Image 1 (tube, helix red, strand yellow):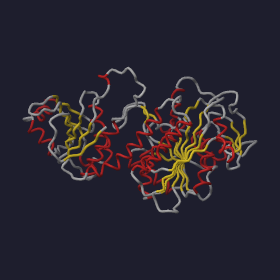
Image 2: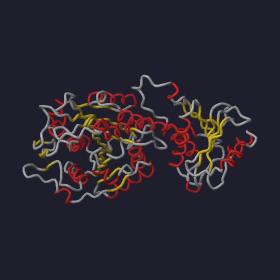
Image 3: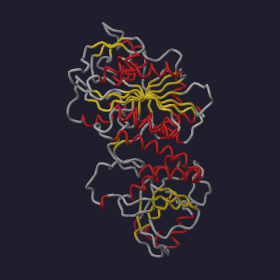
Image 4: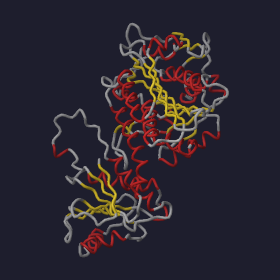
Length: 495
């Protein structure tokens, strides 16, 4: 999708998008378009009794006086409340409306459109960002789609009287690329995306200056990663561990490390899942997808920080070699684990990935992301990712990043009791707790693999990796959740 910025006159073809505040504050662009159409815009507003509440639209098709196909008024709500995420939602909502037409160009007329909570340059950049984010489609496997069903839109034009809006947009464009990468990864079917092919996609980040390391089964066996390898031993797709290094900060500074669960397909193993809904488990690598997309965004915008992304990639399948309930495995840390449920596999992958990350990079801060438990969706539905940490300062930094980006987080409990619930009778720990607090006991399990001097947070994003319905800046499907969160966390705290 081409995104352009201009201070010149509006093009005479394409659809014009004009934002309108609910409190009666109208922009210069609104007045100019109304004048060029000999008052057609005002007449349309009055005839439809249009009230520009947030997201509410009015479409005026083929107005007289201009050659444009339509004018689309988009409600922006109250000007006093309008902020950065509202600007993105406005851009995305307008594009969602126009994707249903045969229009090739969307022109956002922003002259004189301003709000107190956001500068004019940032406002234009955010609208462009939201608009581009909504254009995402995963349609590579559709071979017989009717031409009329495919969106014709190929260009988004931002017309504003503000100079340098394009420069402000460049950083968001790179972040958008990272989000799109994550959406692609999460959307791919498991016969296409498995540990080896996922690792190869990570290797493409070398074009951005990312140093990529890939460990195979042989290397991981030598390191003693019995916990991770046990999950993938029932699959004919060999497991992988991938590290992505971006050292854009001060030489010698300890990096911040992100660790992602990458179960490219999860049958549950011998503790097999019900057939209904199992196809959704192609996105059980959502944590690894988020880490990979975040590394693309961070490297793409040349962040001045040292950041490492590590992902454990496995496929959890049942066969004659598969791990059994009751097996005991030895992790890289030397701790032993009684595997009572082979469907509680993501934590087994992360256990070794977390330990290896700390041993290799000596980070002060580690954050892991995983589509880890169904229990987190019972608690938080699809509104928040769960955050588990005993570090109040780290929790606040992550929560602030979530508020700034819309990748919302809600802090959940992690106490001594949760650690006691995963004690095993025959090993150092077991991989599940009791009947309750499933998300907290999963976090406690991961906490057993964090060293004393490391600040750590676990993000359970099981409810956030996939959208069940269209949203203003994202269509139904892979959400890309976590990319903007991690990027903002780095931007605000490490640059």
